[in-house]
Length: 315
Image 1 (cartoon, rainbow, N blue to C red):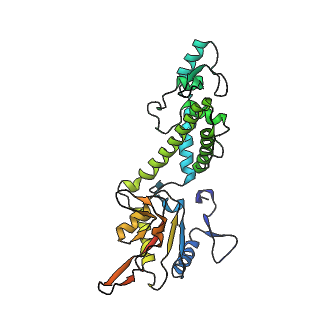
Image 2: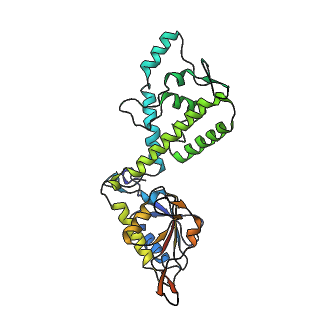
């Protein structure tokens, strides 16, 4: 909640095995949360799960990190919905209707173009696909904005960008991947155009996410978010050497964790081995960094205080 609504801002805090999180005042409860987390840092076995919110940070009303799924979905869906409100290629559609003397039917309707595939199967091409085969967006539009036929196809599938999916892109991707799986299993040549549409939509969502992960204030010299990650990993390094090394898990696509540890000179394992051609190797999680004390007797000692194991999604 915002203070402008006349209601104090609160956050939920779960601790000490409580079943339900406690609502805490944003200004008064923050110190309590910090103290509790600081104490937890000294526990014997510590594991952290960093979610999307850990890479998001508002500074002077501007996002200097990576937005969470809700604002990302709102931006992605909003771009296409704005184009829908503007009529997409209204002029071209009107021209097509004048020439045919009737309205162009939707994707589930008329079938006017036949193409025979290499397997001899005939493919039915919809009017929208034939007219708007070029997936390039209109001049001035975002490159990941959905084209008219792509939007119509999603609508035909019951995917409404105004409800539900405009708050979570991962949910949208789940539906798209499911539809693509079904189409890939089909041996009907008439499904080829639909598979092509689904692939194009998926590629645009991925391109949008990639741009937001890599193009931000953090990529233009702002180190605010990375500084917070560095402070976090410094705390872990300062743990007692007798304590087991902590584990850090993250489902995020960004590489803030790796960047922070690289800058601090902290060795870590993220499941990937190799430098030029990196490959995922789960066995690397069992490796231990050690310091050789005596070459002759082959004495080794694990460098526990500076080894942080992070399980990250990014290579």
